Amino acid sequence: MSEESIFITYVGDSPRMRLLQYLIEGRDVDYTLTDMLNANVSWGTLHHIVPLMLECGLLVQTRKIGRATLYKINQKNEVAQQFIVLYDKLLSQRLHEIQEVTEVIV
Image (cartoon, rainbow, N blue to C red; front, side, top):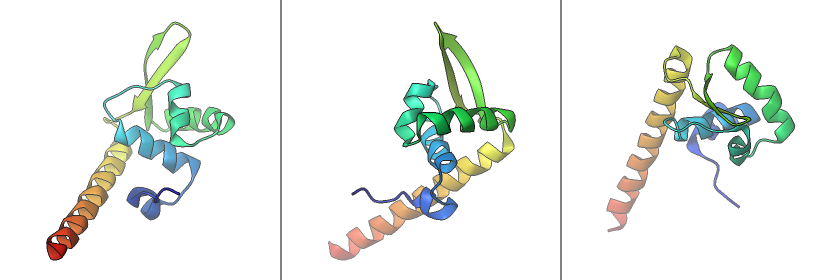
């Protein structure tokens, strides 16, 4: 059983948030829909979420390779930027907490 991420703990565990976290973690990489299945989102849900995220500007289409379309998080979108800042702050806070516990043990 894997530990829930700190980001998901704060924003809630939903397919949209799992996909958003996946895209934030690989923010400089573009992904096919098949790649996005690694976010633990079903194929049907992915086909529902991706158009919504494109429409609100969180996701951007980057290129096409053959029949595959690639996407990535839209780092120019203000809302996406805020999610990225939140993710980075939560991760930094968690790493700081782990470091403090490690120092106490040593």
